[in-house]
Image (cartoon, rainbow, N blue to C red):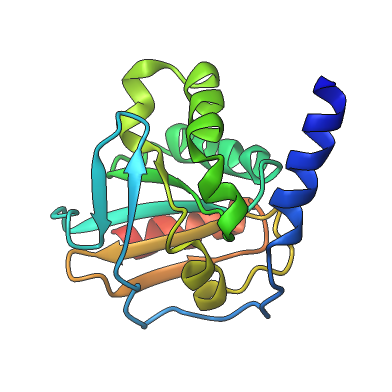
Length: 172
């Protein structure tokens, strides 16, 4: 019974996404979106971020966590210290119906002290995917914004040292 339910959930979660071509969004305004962090606080982006610069690591699939982790390790090793948020961004009605289940699963795999930095985007997931494009969905979308939401840096081709160095230059 559990395997049948798992297959049903997988089909619902994967069947509700549209394909959008990747975009180059540097210089554009990040869309006003909202989500809930794993501490269950509503966060409106970019309004609730008041640092000079904030980094968003956006993932469209569970498999994009691998790329996000590589970015986080690279940022740490490079000594980059700025507010950084992971945004699991899930489009479609079915994921919203299972959001409690999905968020609970993420809480089990993430240390509690990091929950505030993981903001799950459900309602606005389609808008974000359409804005950046969602081709190559295993690659995270690395978005550096200023305090007014302007995108200063954008990268969506998977972690690379060259991309990390360009991001660092955009931060400095």
